[in-house]
Amino acid sequence: MRRCCGPAPGVARPVHLTNLARTENSLTDAEAGPADISTLPSNPQSLPTLRLLAFTAAGFLAITTETIPAGLLPRIGQGLGVSESLVGQFVTSYALGAVVAAVPVIAATRGMRRRPVLISAIAGLLVFNAVTALSTSYHLTLATRFLAGMAAGVVWGVLVGYARRLVPERLQGRALAVVGVGQPVALTLGIPLGTLLGGLVGWRGVFWIISGVSLALLAWIRTLVPDLPGQKASARRPITSVATLPGVRPVLLVVLLWILAHNVLYTYISPYLDAAGLGGRVDAVLFVFGSGAIVGIWWIGALVDRAPRAVTLASLGGFAVAALLLGIGSHSAPAAVIGVACWGITFGGAPTLMQTALADAAGEDADIAQSMLVTVFNLAVAGGGAVGALLLDAAGATALPWVLLTLSVAGGAVVLTARAHGFPPGGRRGS
Image (cartoon, rainbow, N blue to C red):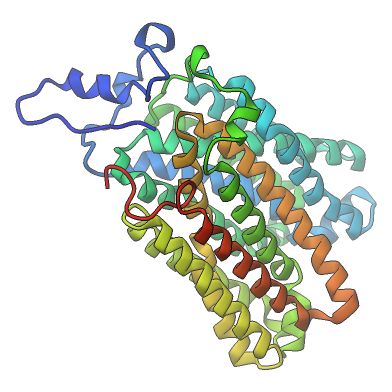
Protein backbone atom coordinates (compact mmCIF):
# COMPACT_ATOMS: atom_id res chain seq x y z
CA MET A 1 0.00 0.00 0.00
CA ARG A 2 1.11 3.59 0.38
CA ARG A 3 4.41 4.54 1.83
CA CYS A 4 3.77 7.97 3.35
CA CYS A 5 6.37 9.93 5.19
CA GLY A 6 6.39 13.39 6.73
CA PRO A 7 8.50 16.20 5.30
CA ALA A 8 11.77 16.97 7.00
CA PRO A 9 12.16 20.45 8.49
CA GLY A 10 12.41 22.99 5.73
CA VAL A 11 11.02 20.70 3.01
CA ALA A 12 8.15 22.21 1.10
CA ARG A 13 4.66 20.77 1.81
CA PRO A 14 3.98 19.73 -1.84
CA VAL A 15 6.62 16.97 -1.51
CA HIS A 16 4.50 15.31 1.18
CA LEU A 17 1.34 15.75 -0.89
CA THR A 18 2.96 14.00 -3.81
CA ASN A 19 3.90 11.03 -1.66
CA LEU A 20 0.40 10.74 -0.26
CA ALA A 21 -1.25 10.99 -3.65
CA ARG A 22 0.42 7.96 -5.21
CA THR A 23 0.21 4.20 -4.65
CA GLU A 24 2.75 1.46 -5.27
CA ASN A 25 3.24 1.22 -9.02
CA SER A 26 -0.49 1.59 -9.58
CA LEU A 27 -1.32 5.28 -10.07
CA THR A 28 -0.06 8.24 -11.99
CA ASP A 29 -1.06 11.84 -11.33
CA ALA A 30 -2.14 12.24 -14.93
CA GLU A 31 -4.44 9.23 -14.96
CA ALA A 32 -5.80 9.15 -11.42
CA GLY A 33 -5.71 12.80 -10.44
CA PRO A 34 -4.35 14.30 -7.24
CA ALA A 35 -5.58 13.77 -3.72
CA ASP A 36 -7.91 16.37 -2.23
CA ILE A 37 -5.32 18.90 -1.04
CA SER A 38 -7.71 20.79 1.23
CA THR A 39 -8.20 17.79 3.52
CA LEU A 40 -4.86 16.02 3.54
CA PRO A 41 -3.39 15.33 7.01
CA SER A 42 -0.97 17.99 8.19
CA ASN A 43 0.96 15.65 10.49
CA PRO A 44 1.68 12.27 8.89
CA GLN A 45 3.38 11.05 12.08
CA SER A 46 0.08 10.74 14.00
CA LEU A 47 -3.28 9.19 13.30
CA PRO A 48 -5.89 11.45 11.64
CA THR A 49 -8.37 10.52 14.36
CA LEU A 50 -11.42 12.49 13.20
CA ARG A 51 -11.12 11.07 9.69
CA LEU A 52 -10.70 7.51 10.92
CA LEU A 53 -13.60 7.91 13.33
CA ALA A 54 -15.79 8.72 10.33
CA PHE A 55 -14.93 5.22 9.08
CA THR A 56 -15.62 3.84 12.57
CA ALA A 57 -19.06 5.43 12.37
CA ALA A 58 -19.57 3.92 8.91
CA GLY A 59 -18.85 0.45 10.28
CA PHE A 60 -21.15 1.08 13.23
CA LEU A 61 -23.89 2.19 10.84
CA ALA A 62 -23.52 -0.88 8.61
CA ILE A 63 -23.63 -3.34 11.54
CA THR A 64 -26.46 -1.52 13.32
CA THR A 65 -28.54 -1.49 10.14
CA GLU A 66 -27.95 -5.23 9.84
CA THR A 67 -28.80 -6.24 13.41
CA ILE A 68 -31.43 -3.68 14.44
CA PRO A 69 -34.43 -5.83 13.35
CA ALA A 70 -33.44 -8.46 15.95
CA GLY A 71 -34.37 -6.04 18.73
CA LEU A 72 -37.59 -4.98 17.02
CA LEU A 73 -39.03 -8.35 15.96
CA PRO A 74 -42.42 -8.09 17.68
CA ARG A 75 -43.00 -4.47 16.69
CA ILE A 76 -42.04 -4.95 13.04
CA GLY A 77 -44.08 -8.16 12.88
CA GLN A 78 -47.16 -6.37 14.17
CA GLY A 79 -46.58 -3.42 11.88
CA LEU A 80 -46.26 -5.53 8.75
CA GLY A 81 -48.68 -8.26 9.79
CA VAL A 82 -46.15 -11.12 9.65
CA SER A 83 -44.55 -13.54 12.10
CA GLU A 84 -41.37 -12.80 14.01
CA SER A 85 -39.59 -15.59 12.13
CA LEU A 86 -40.34 -13.84 8.84
CA VAL A 87 -39.04 -10.55 10.25
CA GLY A 88 -35.87 -12.43 11.19
CA GLN A 89 -35.27 -12.98 7.49
CA PHE A 90 -34.53 -9.26 7.20
CA VAL A 91 -31.14 -9.99 8.78
CA THR A 92 -30.55 -12.92 6.40
CA SER A 93 -31.53 -10.85 3.37
CA TYR A 94 -29.13 -8.09 4.40
CA ALA A 95 -26.24 -10.54 4.77
CA LEU A 96 -27.00 -12.08 1.37
CA GLY A 97 -26.94 -8.63 -0.22
CA ALA A 98 -23.45 -8.04 1.18
CA VAL A 99 -22.27 -11.42 -0.11
CA VAL A 100 -23.65 -10.82 -3.61
CA ALA A 101 -22.41 -7.25 -4.03
CA ALA A 102 -19.05 -7.00 -2.32
CA VAL A 103 -16.71 -8.52 -4.91
CA PRO A 104 -18.36 -7.45 -8.20
CA VAL A 105 -19.19 -3.90 -7.10
CA ILE A 106 -15.75 -3.24 -5.59
CA ALA A 107 -14.15 -4.71 -8.72
CA ALA A 108 -16.28 -2.48 -10.95
CA THR A 109 -15.52 0.69 -8.97
CA ARG A 110 -11.86 0.22 -8.06
CA GLY A 111 -10.78 2.72 -10.71
CA MET A 112 -13.06 5.42 -9.28
CA ARG A 113 -12.03 7.97 -6.70
CA ARG A 114 -12.64 6.52 -3.26
CA ARG A 115 -14.70 9.17 -1.52
CA PRO A 116 -17.53 9.22 -4.08
CA VAL A 117 -17.74 5.41 -3.89
CA LEU A 118 -17.96 5.47 -0.09
CA ILE A 119 -20.44 8.35 -0.08
CA SER A 120 -22.64 6.57 -2.62
CA ALA A 121 -22.74 3.43 -0.47
CA ILE A 122 -23.65 5.36 2.68
CA ALA A 123 -26.26 7.30 0.72
CA GLY A 124 -27.68 3.91 -0.25
CA LEU A 125 -28.00 3.00 3.43
CA LEU A 126 -29.77 6.32 4.03
CA VAL A 127 -32.27 5.73 1.22
CA PHE A 128 -32.93 2.06 1.97
CA ASN A 129 -33.44 2.69 5.69
CA ALA A 130 -35.88 5.48 4.80
CA VAL A 131 -37.78 3.15 2.46
CA THR A 132 -37.91 0.57 5.26
CA ALA A 133 -39.39 3.20 7.56
CA LEU A 134 -42.09 4.03 5.00
CA SER A 135 -42.87 0.53 3.74
CA THR A 136 -46.12 -1.25 4.58
CA SER A 137 -45.24 -4.32 2.49
CA TYR A 138 -43.23 -7.24 3.83
CA HIS A 139 -41.87 -8.18 0.41
CA LEU A 140 -40.83 -4.59 -0.39
CA THR A 141 -39.06 -4.37 2.97
CA LEU A 142 -37.33 -7.70 2.40
CA ALA A 143 -36.08 -6.53 -1.01
CA THR A 144 -35.00 -3.20 0.46
CA ARG A 145 -33.01 -5.00 3.13
CA PHE A 146 -31.21 -6.96 0.42
CA LEU A 147 -30.27 -3.69 -1.31
CA ALA A 148 -29.14 -2.20 2.00
CA GLY A 149 -26.90 -5.24 2.45
CA MET A 150 -25.40 -4.61 -0.97
CA ALA A 151 -24.59 -1.04 0.08
CA ALA A 152 -23.04 -2.30 3.32
CA GLY A 153 -20.90 -4.77 1.37
CA VAL A 154 -19.47 -1.86 -0.59
CA VAL A 155 -18.85 0.12 2.61
CA TRP A 156 -16.84 -2.74 4.11
CA GLY A 157 -15.01 -3.35 0.84
CA VAL A 158 -13.85 0.27 0.64
CA LEU A 159 -13.12 1.13 4.29
CA VAL A 160 -9.97 -0.90 4.89
CA GLY A 161 -7.95 0.13 1.85
CA TYR A 162 -9.13 3.73 2.19
CA ALA A 163 -8.15 3.94 5.88
CA ARG A 164 -4.72 2.40 5.25
CA ARG A 165 -3.99 4.98 2.56
CA LEU A 166 -4.68 7.87 4.96
CA VAL A 167 -1.73 7.00 7.22
CA PRO A 168 1.95 6.06 6.97
CA GLU A 169 2.60 2.35 6.54
CA ARG A 170 3.87 1.95 10.09
CA LEU A 171 0.49 3.16 11.46
CA GLN A 172 -1.80 1.15 9.22
CA GLY A 173 -2.59 -1.55 11.78
CA ARG A 174 -3.44 1.04 14.42
CA ALA A 175 -5.64 2.86 11.92
CA LEU A 176 -7.62 -0.31 11.24
CA ALA A 177 -7.99 -0.86 14.99
CA VAL A 178 -9.64 2.58 15.27
CA VAL A 179 -11.92 1.81 12.33
CA GLY A 180 -12.73 -1.60 13.82
CA VAL A 181 -14.16 -0.22 17.08
CA GLY A 182 -17.49 0.41 15.36
CA GLN A 183 -18.28 -3.30 15.01
CA PRO A 184 -18.20 -4.44 18.67
CA VAL A 185 -19.89 -1.22 19.80
CA ALA A 186 -22.71 -1.86 17.31
CA LEU A 187 -22.99 -5.51 18.32
CA THR A 188 -23.03 -4.58 22.01
CA LEU A 189 -25.30 -1.54 21.93
CA GLY A 190 -27.15 -1.74 18.62
CA ILE A 191 -29.85 -4.26 19.55
CA PRO A 192 -30.52 -2.95 23.10
CA LEU A 193 -30.55 0.64 21.83
CA GLY A 194 -32.91 -0.31 19.02
CA THR A 195 -35.24 -2.01 21.48
CA LEU A 196 -35.20 1.05 23.76
CA LEU A 197 -35.81 3.52 20.91
CA GLY A 198 -38.48 1.25 19.46
CA GLY A 199 -40.46 1.65 22.69
CA LEU A 200 -40.10 5.43 22.50
CA VAL A 201 -40.56 6.27 18.81
CA GLY A 202 -41.78 3.02 17.26
CA TRP A 203 -39.85 0.75 14.89
CA ARG A 204 -40.34 3.08 11.94
CA GLY A 205 -38.91 5.91 13.99
CA VAL A 206 -35.80 3.84 14.65
CA PHE A 207 -35.15 3.49 10.92
CA TRP A 208 -35.72 7.22 10.46
CA ILE A 209 -33.11 7.87 13.15
CA ILE A 210 -30.64 5.59 11.35
CA SER A 211 -31.31 7.51 8.14
CA GLY A 212 -30.59 10.75 10.00
CA VAL A 213 -27.31 9.33 11.29
CA SER A 214 -26.45 8.36 7.70
CA LEU A 215 -27.07 11.93 6.55
CA ALA A 216 -24.82 13.34 9.28
CA LEU A 217 -22.12 10.82 8.38
CA LEU A 218 -22.28 11.87 4.73
CA ALA A 219 -21.57 15.47 5.77
CA TRP A 220 -18.74 14.32 8.05
CA ILE A 221 -17.02 12.34 5.30
CA ARG A 222 -17.52 15.04 2.67
CA THR A 223 -16.08 17.69 4.98
CA LEU A 224 -13.17 15.95 6.70
CA VAL A 225 -12.12 12.85 4.76
CA PRO A 226 -9.74 13.44 1.84
CA ASP A 227 -10.62 12.07 -1.56
CA LEU A 228 -8.07 9.65 -2.99
CA PRO A 229 -7.67 8.30 -6.53
CA GLY A 230 -8.68 4.83 -7.60
CA GLN A 231 -6.47 2.18 -9.17
CA LYS A 232 -4.82 2.67 -12.54
CA ALA A 233 -6.42 0.49 -15.22
CA SER A 234 -3.16 -1.17 -16.25
CA ALA A 235 -2.49 -2.23 -12.65
CA ARG A 236 -5.83 -3.95 -12.05
CA ARG A 237 -5.53 -7.71 -11.74
CA PRO A 238 -8.43 -10.01 -12.59
CA ILE A 239 -10.38 -11.12 -9.52
CA THR A 240 -9.14 -14.68 -9.89
CA SER A 241 -5.54 -13.46 -9.95
CA VAL A 242 -6.06 -11.54 -6.71
CA ALA A 243 -7.47 -14.68 -5.10
CA THR A 244 -4.33 -16.62 -6.02
CA LEU A 245 -1.83 -14.05 -4.71
CA PRO A 246 0.53 -15.66 -2.17
CA GLY A 247 -0.95 -15.27 1.29
CA VAL A 248 -4.48 -14.33 0.30
CA ARG A 249 -6.00 -17.81 0.53
CA PRO A 250 -4.47 -18.70 3.93
CA VAL A 251 -5.80 -15.46 5.40
CA LEU A 252 -9.28 -16.05 3.95
CA LEU A 253 -9.23 -19.61 5.33
CA VAL A 254 -8.44 -18.30 8.81
CA VAL A 255 -11.26 -15.76 8.42
CA LEU A 256 -13.66 -18.58 7.54
CA LEU A 257 -12.61 -20.77 10.48
CA TRP A 258 -12.49 -17.99 13.06
CA ILE A 259 -15.76 -16.27 12.12
CA LEU A 260 -17.52 -19.61 11.73
CA ALA A 261 -16.35 -20.63 15.21
CA HIS A 262 -17.48 -17.34 16.72
CA ASN A 263 -20.94 -17.44 15.19
CA VAL A 264 -21.65 -21.06 16.07
CA LEU A 265 -21.95 -19.93 19.70
CA TYR A 266 -22.74 -16.21 19.36
CA THR A 267 -25.87 -16.93 17.32
CA TYR A 268 -27.13 -19.28 20.03
CA ILE A 269 -25.78 -17.53 23.10
CA SER A 270 -29.24 -17.43 24.72
CA PRO A 271 -29.71 -21.22 25.01
CA TYR A 272 -26.09 -21.59 26.16
CA LEU A 273 -26.65 -19.02 28.91
CA ASP A 274 -29.88 -20.76 29.86
CA ALA A 275 -27.86 -23.90 30.59
CA ALA A 276 -25.41 -21.84 32.66
CA GLY A 277 -28.22 -20.30 34.71
CA LEU A 278 -27.91 -16.88 33.07
CA GLY A 279 -30.95 -17.00 30.81
CA GLY A 280 -32.35 -13.79 32.25
CA ARG A 281 -29.07 -11.88 31.93
CA VAL A 282 -28.35 -12.17 28.22
CA ASP A 283 -28.02 -8.40 27.71
CA ALA A 284 -25.62 -8.10 30.66
CA VAL A 285 -23.46 -10.98 29.40
CA LEU A 286 -23.38 -9.51 25.89
CA PHE A 287 -22.25 -6.24 27.44
CA VAL A 288 -19.38 -8.15 29.07
CA PHE A 289 -18.53 -9.61 25.68
CA GLY A 290 -18.65 -6.24 23.95
CA SER A 291 -16.55 -4.56 26.64
CA GLY A 292 -13.98 -7.32 26.32
CA ALA A 293 -14.00 -6.91 22.54
CA ILE A 294 -13.20 -3.22 22.85
CA VAL A 295 -10.29 -4.06 25.17
CA GLY A 296 -9.16 -6.63 22.60
CA ILE A 297 -9.19 -4.06 19.82
CA TRP A 298 -7.11 -1.72 21.97
CA TRP A 299 -4.32 -4.22 22.63
CA ILE A 300 -4.40 -5.53 19.06
CA GLY A 301 -4.10 -1.96 17.79
CA ALA A 302 -1.06 -1.41 20.01
CA LEU A 303 0.76 -4.52 18.79
CA VAL A 304 -0.46 -5.46 15.31
CA ASP A 305 2.11 -3.38 13.41
CA ARG A 306 5.02 -4.69 15.48
CA ALA A 307 4.28 -8.42 15.62
CA PRO A 308 1.19 -9.36 13.57
CA ARG A 309 1.96 -13.09 13.36
CA ALA A 310 2.65 -13.45 17.08
CA VAL A 311 -0.43 -11.43 18.01
CA THR A 312 -2.63 -13.51 15.69
CA LEU A 313 -1.37 -16.74 17.23
CA ALA A 314 -1.85 -15.34 20.72
CA SER A 315 -5.40 -14.26 19.89
CA LEU A 316 -6.34 -17.64 18.46
CA GLY A 317 -4.69 -19.37 21.41
CA GLY A 318 -6.63 -17.19 23.84
CA PHE A 319 -9.81 -17.83 21.86
CA ALA A 320 -9.21 -21.58 22.27
CA VAL A 321 -8.70 -21.12 26.03
CA ALA A 322 -11.95 -19.13 26.21
CA ALA A 323 -13.74 -21.94 24.35
CA LEU A 324 -12.30 -24.46 26.82
CA LEU A 325 -13.56 -22.37 29.76
CA LEU A 326 -17.00 -22.10 28.17
CA GLY A 327 -17.08 -25.84 27.55
CA ILE A 328 -15.94 -26.91 31.00
CA GLY A 329 -18.02 -24.27 32.78
CA SER A 330 -21.18 -24.59 30.70
CA HIS A 331 -23.25 -25.23 33.85
CA SER A 332 -21.50 -22.61 35.98
CA ALA A 333 -22.53 -18.97 35.81
CA PRO A 334 -19.16 -17.55 37.05
CA ALA A 335 -17.18 -19.74 34.65
CA ALA A 336 -19.46 -18.76 31.78
CA VAL A 337 -19.03 -15.04 32.49
CA ILE A 338 -15.24 -15.38 32.70
CA GLY A 339 -15.24 -17.41 29.50
CA VAL A 340 -17.36 -14.81 27.70
CA ALA A 341 -15.03 -12.00 28.84
CA CYS A 342 -11.99 -13.93 27.53
CA TRP A 343 -13.90 -14.68 24.34
CA GLY A 344 -14.58 -10.98 23.76
CA ILE A 345 -10.99 -9.93 24.51
CA THR A 346 -9.47 -12.52 22.16
CA PHE A 347 -12.02 -12.11 19.37
CA GLY A 348 -12.46 -8.33 19.40
CA GLY A 349 -9.30 -7.68 17.38
CA ALA A 350 -9.85 -10.55 14.94
CA PRO A 351 -11.22 -8.34 12.12
CA THR A 352 -8.28 -5.93 12.50
CA LEU A 353 -5.77 -8.78 12.38
CA MET A 354 -7.38 -10.40 9.34
CA GLN A 355 -7.87 -7.15 7.45
CA THR A 356 -4.26 -6.14 8.09
CA ALA A 357 -2.87 -9.52 7.02
CA LEU A 358 -5.03 -9.63 3.91
CA ALA A 359 -4.25 -6.08 2.83
CA ASP A 360 -0.53 -6.73 3.28
CA ALA A 361 -0.78 -9.91 1.20
CA ALA A 362 -2.81 -8.24 -1.57
CA GLY A 363 -0.82 -4.99 -1.78
CA GLU A 364 -2.33 -2.59 -4.29
CA ASP A 365 -5.26 -4.98 -4.80
CA ALA A 366 -6.31 -4.62 -1.15
CA ASP A 367 -9.83 -3.38 -1.98
CA ILE A 368 -10.61 -6.47 -4.05
CA ALA A 369 -9.14 -8.73 -1.38
CA GLN A 370 -11.18 -6.99 1.31
CA SER A 371 -14.35 -7.49 -0.72
CA MET A 372 -13.49 -11.20 -0.72
CA LEU A 373 -13.13 -10.99 3.05
CA VAL A 374 -16.62 -9.43 3.26
CA THR A 375 -18.00 -12.36 1.25
CA VAL A 376 -16.22 -15.04 3.29
CA PHE A 377 -17.11 -13.26 6.54
CA ASN A 378 -20.83 -13.20 5.76
CA LEU A 379 -20.80 -16.79 4.52
CA ALA A 380 -19.17 -17.78 7.81
CA VAL A 381 -21.86 -15.88 9.72
CA ALA A 382 -24.56 -17.81 7.85
CA GLY A 383 -22.64 -21.06 8.21
CA GLY A 384 -22.25 -20.53 11.93
CA GLY A 385 -26.00 -20.19 12.29
CA ALA A 386 -26.61 -23.37 10.28
CA VAL A 387 -23.96 -25.48 12.04
CA GLY A 388 -25.04 -24.19 15.44
CA ALA A 389 -28.67 -25.06 14.72
CA LEU A 390 -27.76 -28.64 13.83
CA LEU A 391 -25.64 -29.05 16.96
CA LEU A 392 -28.26 -27.41 19.15
CA ASP A 393 -30.87 -29.93 18.02
CA ALA A 394 -28.53 -32.92 18.13
CA ALA A 395 -26.45 -32.33 21.27
CA GLY A 396 -27.68 -29.21 23.04
CA ALA A 397 -26.15 -25.80 23.65
CA THR A 398 -23.38 -27.12 25.90
CA ALA A 399 -21.78 -28.82 22.88
CA LEU A 400 -21.26 -25.52 21.05
CA PRO A 401 -18.05 -24.35 22.82
CA TRP A 402 -16.24 -27.52 21.78
CA VAL A 403 -16.79 -26.57 18.14
CA LEU A 404 -15.17 -23.21 18.88
CA LEU A 405 -12.19 -25.01 20.36
CA THR A 406 -11.80 -27.31 17.35
CA LEU A 407 -12.11 -24.56 14.77
CA SER A 408 -9.76 -22.19 16.63
CA VAL A 409 -7.07 -24.90 16.78
CA ALA A 410 -7.53 -25.44 13.04
CA GLY A 411 -7.18 -21.68 12.45
CA GLY A 412 -4.00 -21.59 14.51
CA ALA A 413 -2.58 -24.44 12.46
CA VAL A 414 -3.19 -22.47 9.25
CA VAL A 415 -1.40 -19.44 10.70
CA LEU A 416 1.55 -21.58 11.77
CA THR A 417 1.94 -23.07 8.29
CA ALA A 418 1.49 -19.76 6.45
CA ARG A 419 4.88 -18.47 7.56
CA ALA A 420 6.19 -17.48 4.13
CA HIS A 421 3.04 -15.73 2.92
CA GLY A 422 -0.03 -14.52 4.78
CA PHE A 423 1.36 -14.49 8.32
CA PRO A 424 5.12 -13.85 8.06
CA PRO A 425 7.22 -13.40 11.22
CA GLY A 426 8.52 -10.05 12.40
CA GLY A 427 6.98 -6.60 12.22
CA ARG A 428 5.14 -5.03 9.33
CA ARG A 429 7.11 -2.98 6.82
CA GLY A 430 7.74 0.52 8.06
CA SER A 431 6.89 -0.29 11.68
